[in-house]
Image (cartoon, rainbow, N blue to C red; front, side, top):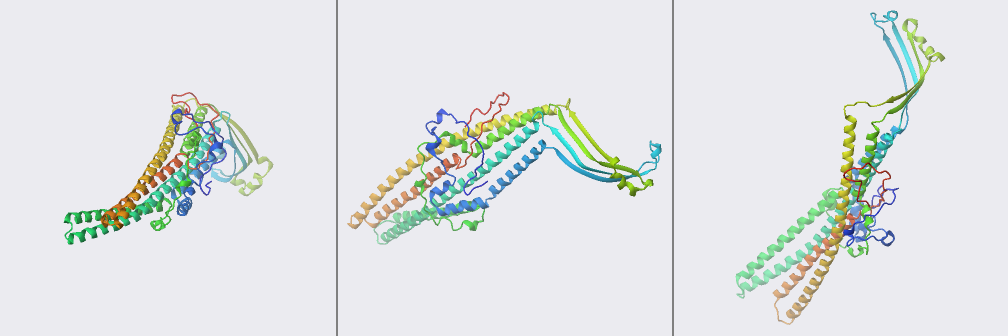
Length: 487
C-alpha cells in the first residue's frame, strides 16, 4: 500500500550486510540502533516548506506514473492467482441435450435412418494434476517474485517522483530568489547608466563610459528575462510531475523559506541502507523468480501425473420411442454414471522444445543475476557520489558565505567613504552590485547543496523499507555465480 509518504512493503526478513572495503571511507557499518531510521518516510518535510508538502500530497494522489505502476502491480498480483490455481483441483459442472439422425447408409445397419435424442447432466467433474516434482509450486513462486518486484518498482516510481519534485522545487526557489536579485541589479545598472549619461552631458566623462554602462544594463535585462523563462519551465515541470495542468503551478514559489539545516547528515551511515533501494530489491526478486522458472523447466522433463473424475446421469432415446419420456429415463437410477481416470504423460520427444525452453530460462536467470550485481554496483557508486557531493557543496557554500561576508565589509567601507565624500555614488553602486552578485551566486550554491541532499536521500532509498530475505535454495553452478554481492 501507499502510505501518506512512502511505499512500505510488508513481511520480509533481514539479510546480510554488504562488505565493500573500498566504501569504508564513505559509509560505515554502524548498527541500526545508532542510526534509527534515515532518511524518514516523509523526508521532504524536513525542509519545512508547506508549499513543497502540498505538491507531494497532490502528486501521491494524481500522478499518472504512480497510477500506471499501481496497475502493473494489480496485473502481477492477478497472475499470482492464475499460477496458484495450478495447485488446486478444477471442479466444474455441465449439462446438455443433443438430437441427431444416423445416416441411412451408415455402417450400423440397425441404426440406419434413426433419429435420436440424448441428454446428460454432470454436476461434478474433477481435474487435478499432482505436483510431485514441484513444477507448479515453482511457477507460483516465480509469479510471487514478479509481484514482489512490481511492488518495489512502484516504490521506485514513488522515490523518483518525489526526488524529481523536490529537486525541481529547490531549483525553482533558487530561481525565484535570483530573479529578485537580478531585478535589483537591473535597477543598480540603470542608476549607473543615469550617472554616466549625466556626466557625459556635463562633459565630465567620455561616451565610452556611458556606452559600457548601457551594455551592462542590457546584459542585466537579458539575465532577468532568462530567469523568468527558467522559472516558468520549472513551474511547468512541477505541474506535469504532480499530474496537473500548467495553471496548477502558476502561483508556485510564494513560500521561499526552506529550512535545509534540519536535514542533517547522520554521523554514520550503515551500508545496509542500500538494502532499502527499490531498484536493488526489484532486481533481487526478479533473479529469484528466474531461479524458480529454471526449477519448473527441469520438472517439465519428468512425468506428469493427473486425475480426472466425473459423476452424473445420461440417457439416449430414439424419437420413435417418444422423446418426451427422456426426462423420466434420465433421472432413473439406471442412468447414473461415473468415471475415474488417472493418467501419466511422459515427454519422450518434442523436437528439442523442452531443452530450448530450459536454456532460455537459464540465460534469463544469468541476465537477472548480472543485472542485480550491476544494480548493486551502481547503488554503491550513487551513494558514494551523493555523499561526496553533499560534503563538497557544503564546503563550497561555506566558502561562498565567507566571500559574501567580505563583500559586505567592503560595502560598509564604501558607504563610509561615500558619506565622507571620498568616493562618488558610482563606486557605492558598484560595491552594492558586487554584493548582489555574490548573493546571486550563493542562491545557486544553496540549491546545489539542497539538491545534493535529495540525491543522497534517493540513493539510500528515500525512506523505503524492505528487508530482503536470503534465498534458501542454491541454484546450480554457473559462470556468473549466485548473486556474489549481497546486502
